[in-house]
Length: 170
Figure 1 (cartoon, rainbow, N blue to C red):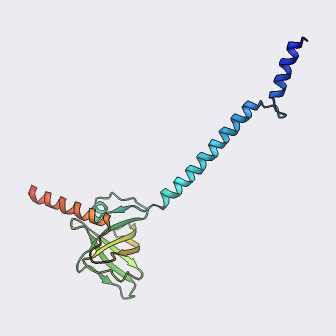
Figure 2: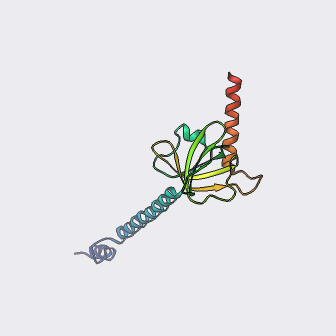
């Protein structure tokens, strides 16, 4: 062997790790595994956020079946006047939520907020059952005379606009 061949073989031997993998390949594998680990963490975080987000829908959107099936969501509007009925057990309440265009029947078992009343703003969280009745797990009422949740106000404004457009079209 010549001296040039020994130097070349020595450089190749130095670049190969004891396990038989070149240092360059080893670095590449670390980078690939690191990126895969980072992608897995990002996917888990995004999945956790996606499953915990509760979307808001108006009664019109609920009636038009634009809501997720089998997932919890929020419906908001005004409690329809004369619609509140309390069950004999005192905890179950039946009422209707309206955006003045459409109405959704709601059933809630629990203690209602003190500010819950007919013709007042409300947001209910729960799921739609197979009969189209919203089974609420939580009911939120507005906190003062002037406040209406922004989502509820937008839904009411949209319903008023649609009703006015329908009236003009007739």
